[in-house]
Image (cartoon, rainbow, N blue to C red; front, top):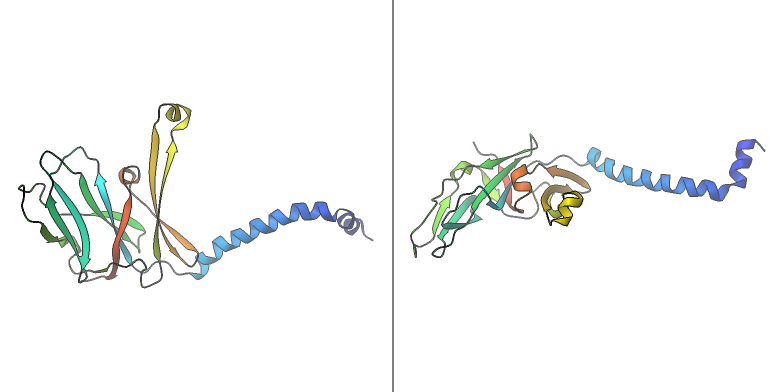
Length: 201
């Protein structure tokens, strides 16, 4: 028997102990890489909202976003007296460039006490049809994860925790990270508003 085969025969348990972890690692690597080859990239833009952006300003309204008949609307209401809200924001993830940008909003920054709610169509999205569903027509779904981490030993001692929001698009094993802008990433969760299914004019 050749020396190599004899070594393998005499040390079968030892060889298996080394080989098995390598096989498992290889399996997980393939499970991660294969979806990138066989699952096409996203075919639709994604509209997201963040509840607040801490920019130092205080506004006397609250804003809720909703989708109606393919259009994105903002419902604006006054807050109770002597209270203030923070600035809401809409974000558009471009599936072609894999980038994200803030959607400009033309909203009032204050309303009279007792004034009826106003419904305002988001003009920056005019000509684009949005559907409010959890899954895009191409099968992608949004996955958000919020995590907190310390700033080292000193940060843990003094209670300085850093919160992060991570947003990903997932389809049949393929995961695509949405690049959340740094100010929002550390300040507020992000939620899906809808998928853009008509690119418009």
